[in-house]
Image (cartoon, rainbow, N blue to C red; front, side, top):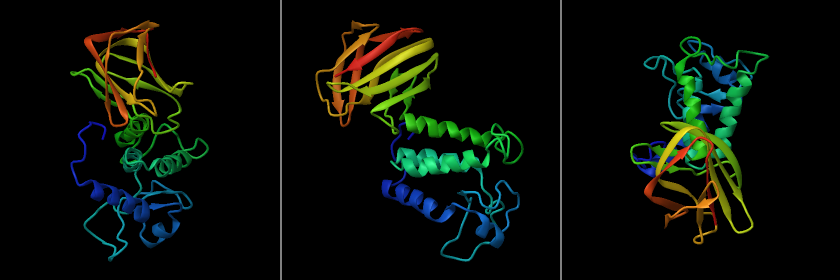
Amino acid sequence: HQLGLGYIYPEDKVRSSLESVWKYNWTPDVTAQNKAHPPLRWFISPGEAGIFTCTWPKSKHLSKGVLYKNEVWTGIEYQVAGHMVAEGKVQEALVICRAVHDRYAPGKHNPWNEVECGDHYARGMASWGVYLSLLGFQYHGPKGILTFDPKLNPEDFRAAFTTAKGWGTYSRTIGDKGPIARIDLQWGELELNQLRVPTGEAKSGFEVTLNGKRLPVQFQIDGDFVEIEFPEGLRMKAGEGLELTA
């Protein structure tokens, strides 16, 4: 989903796999599973929630063959959560992320050090994937295509984003006539040939402005998105704001 490649595997299998992970690997309390199958390394304490690396709900638990099968890794949890957001399972994703947050609360552990095979392990950076999924963010730098599709509070949304040469904020609100989408570039520059954002109920009557000045653009509706084409390309600089209204 993050690369915009679509489904590499059958969509129904992808969704059923995620549902199985939620049903068989997620638990609000690891105590029973830890007692039955102690992990090689302890990254979670009794009473805490998490996703086990492996479970065998319909067959005998393998005693050998999968070294880390009984462990809980934040890197896997974030990957699952990010994928769930992309498949519309936002509530489940937030529950998983909250479990990690609670496990690494400052009163218990260092919240900046999610331990796996050592301190400050890199796999925890998969959390950025959850953020991108919630933002519905896709970016093709060479083609100059930027997409936003907020999955959390889409009627009143604001979040930071990064591109090849700059970073800024994307916001979306609902005005009297329809959605208002805005990009404010805070640093660097942003080169755009196409911007894709949700249309909401609006299907026509769009207007795009840069710093309050109307731009000559072309519109195309693609399902629930409006594709805004900049025929001559658009180069935004830090401090500039691009706004789409309907």
